[in-house]
Image 1 (cartoon, rainbow, N blue to C red):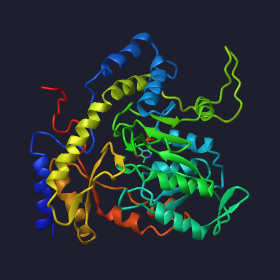
Image 2 (image 1 turned 90 degrees about the vertical axis):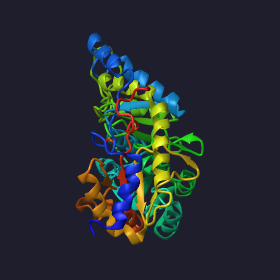
Image 3 (image 1 turned 90 degrees about the horizontal axis):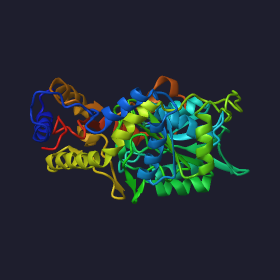
Image 4 (image 1 turned 30 degrees about the vertical axis):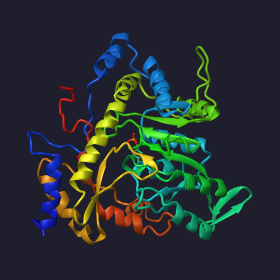
Amino acid sequence: MINSLFVSDVLERLRKVLPSGDGLYALHAPHFSGNEWRYVKECLDTGWVSSAGSFVNRLEQELASYTGIKHAVAVVNGSAALHAALLLSGVEAGDEVLIPSLTFIATANAVSYCGAVPHLADSSEHTLGLDPVKLEQYLKETADLRGGFCYNRNTGKRIKAIVPMHTLGHPVDLEPLAEICAHYRLEMIEDAAESLGSLYKGRHTGSWGSLAAISLNGNKIITAGGGGAILTNNEKLARQARHITTTAKLPHRWKFVHDQTGYNYRLPNLNAALAVAQLEQLPEMLNRKRALASAYEEAFRQAKGIRFFHEPSFASSNYWLNALLLDESHAIHLEALLEQTNQTDIMTRPLWTPLHQLPMLEHCPRMDLSTAESLARRIINIPSSAFLLEPDGREA
Ligand SMILES: *Cc1c(COP(=O)(O)O)cnc(C)c1O
């Protein structure tokens, strides 16, 4: 089994794109070849390292202008962005929030931080994100509308919101989800942590929900070291987002008066400086990542039992993490593939364990999750750094 013809064939195809060299092909390495040193040094030289400082405001403005979403509020990480966005959407303790079972744990954690309950939904093989057709059918059977709110018939709890996530940077099918939200009076908060630079029908992901969260963690397409942002087109929500992420302090020259429980979620200037420099290079990174994705796609075009996951037809993806998708008949080879690649210089990882298989979430309400389970058994993520093929990152 370990040296099956299938596994050797996959390795050979990977080698066409990743020839043996001196180093490791990491899954996703950050890359600093722009103004990072200069901007971070500027923070140190001027003493503005913490949550006040010009780079935080500059990052917010530049994220807004890059995404075309009116307001960005910079925070300490993507999890905090999601948490604040859920609170601002009116999610309260005891509510249920629909999220995909196939997502990074942070999506569920943010719901739990609100005292709310993750309600787990299935994914589509076409997008790797929420399946709107299956969700609509499920809600027809499970949800009641009463007094302008949506209730789960089985638990009696209010279903307040839905959090679509753009898996590995590939946009989920947002339009039918937006229709479901309108019908069932659900707030939509996009978990766009992985999809900075990805477009759905020509518009940046994060602009369909009333609020969205992005992450600037070290493994994301660009990084602040650690960081994130809340995005919204709604000025009032943006103002509230800024308020609750800065301890809900009322502006005053010296008095400390706070009008609600707030959070110390503001991004430090040091991190913002790094992010501003990274954002300047995002267009180039996107070009390089698309080129890498094409090379993989070409290498796996004729492969049997496995294919390269291509962006959905309605989307332009940032190809944050490249993925190979095994046929159901070849899922048994996943372990051997992970084993064989990680033994060499090719770093690979499986997708996440579906959330309903984790101990603290196994009792959450949920629909049939067979596609999520199947995808989790069949996806392998392969080296995806923007500068993977040119380690020094400089143009010749
Ligand atoms: C990375 C990520 C987050 C959280 O971002 P952090 O900055 O690590 O807190 C949330 N959701 C998804 C899907 C992610 O991949």
